[in-house]
Image (cartoon, rainbow, N blue to C red; front, side):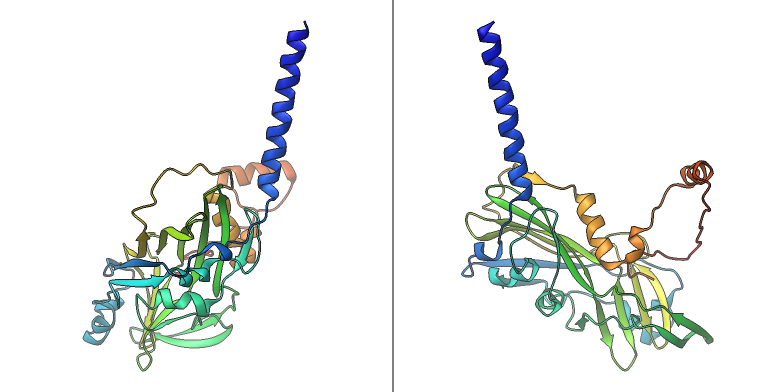
Length: 303
């Protein structure tokens, strides 16, 4: 009997200890900026596929349009960055896992300049107001809704004794030609940064355009179109640091992406359900259903 009580006491003590340990991990704050070694460099590779599909055929509308959009490629296929440059994605102070912070676009833009020197944080369609555009000879009046969708945010997704993973989301665009009013506006750039806390180096860096259909909005000479670019990304990896990581505390990637989206769009807080589930919920709670039919999406900059 005494042995059973002893075993029970040990088990209870172990469970309490584990619970306290997990709670400590979840509430632990860390300052990641102090861990980077500024003497190291990292080679970043850039990829930018041609436009594979266009909703309205704008890239082929004329030789001038083709010259703007048919031969896009990285300004620098490979570029070396000092590790210190990656502080652009780190929080200014101490944070916990799950915390979201805004990024300084002046520090982020040098990475986007590897794609094109016209990278800018100022979205040309962001301000509200009324304007008129011409699409294939037809004048169309647009009522533009000002959206607080510029900028960039990051989130500490996971932490281990040796590594930290940050996920981020960036809204920016590329001015291809000022006179032609030509812009290339990705739906978003998303990515991750894995930092080795022991060595002060970057293990992995990935910044990419999600490969969803109509993932870029293009504009030129007053015309607009939604197009599909299969691949547009920056990739870097430290070949000497690829051992398995056991995360001590983390949130899911879906939760991190949801938090980043909510930082851009207030509408992300709206409760959404599949149609059948929405109908059942509306009937059970005696609530109306608000249905929107749109050409495009509400949670990125592709349209």
